[in-house]
Length: 86
Image 1 (cartoon, rainbow, N blue to C red):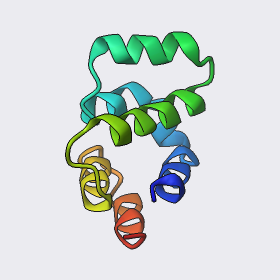
Image 2: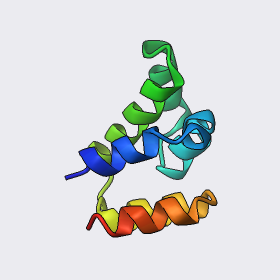
Image 3: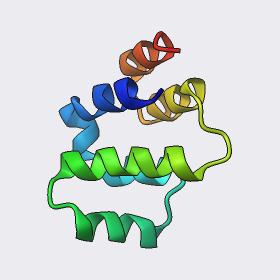
């Protein structure tokens, strides 16, 4: 369900650059962020793992929620793209 939007997000250099900010918006705590940082050397992988962690551990996980988070970070066109994947 989320593979396509996750890949789309991780294709954007701007999203990869701010993966920690994205992780915080996805409600990951500092310990989870540090664990991801320690396990995965590339920012691309860290971004993807943060998204996967969100999908597995949050109560409300759906495309509109993901689009809202992406919009909060200032990626309006990407958020619209994700909404259209629903």
